[in-house]
Length: 380
Image (cartoon, rainbow, N blue to C red; front, side, top):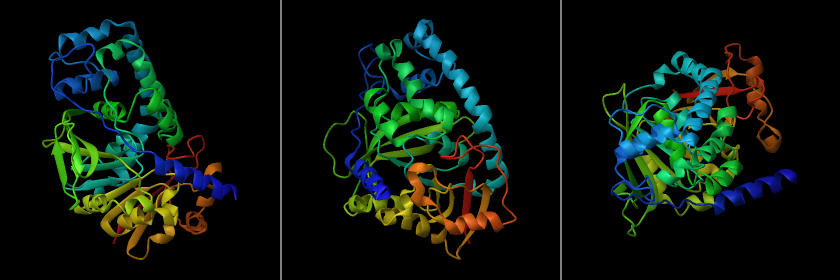
């Protein structure tokens, strides 16, 4: 009964939340103008400030002046220390594992499907740096970047608070994200901007996107506040310094439960229209284990060529003979809130498969133990 009550409460919360994007508007810088309204070039500079990275000489003088503000100086100090810890304990090791174990997935003209991602562009790009498109979905609203006045105040402190769980565990907690992104940072866009800057990417453009009935995206300027048909999201075009061509990320604050997806066939068509897809699933609350999320589960099973996930993704039993699997780490019972997610067959496989490789980093909910697991499925 406790399990049922928790599941209903979680799904109820999931179903009630939706995103409310804000708008860009091209105009000169001013203290009272959100930095989501000037040029995209300025937005990239602000991403670097939030990520505590040096500004280039070409940065506007009023942005450079932020370096003289005590709260900004403190942010650079505190954020750099926290990021260095995350890099040494998790990111560098995850990158090494990526280069050793999934290089075959780093092909050109591929796309990444990341359901239940929220603002986690960081792990998506870290594991799959060569994709043309990144399709991220979550419950959190899109939000805006900060104003100059906010950056001189306590905004950067709140930004670090919103990122503190990720810095410690390398995943976001839905409940905490809902609270922080409503009261502190106001949406996922600032966090995504930080991750883009910290992965050596430059923001080239940010637009609103509306998914039409046929699943095709319609792009409009971010300052366009007119009504447009379709499911609304945001798209960011960005470029890595080591890559010739730009890449694109889409984010939609939407509900993936079946009862909602029945009315969002255009979103299903949108996802389907991206060929050569791979899936990444991490710390996903075991939602894909239940019948309430079968639409998304079937997209993963029927439309993607590979799936990199922890045990919270599609259960092992759904991957039939047309898939191969490679196991890493140690399998453990789900954390207390998700006891219903235990997989007897997966537990047996981890115990009997002599090819399981160890990992030297945590991945997913078992962040305080050595019992993290990664499953890499490849379609035969």
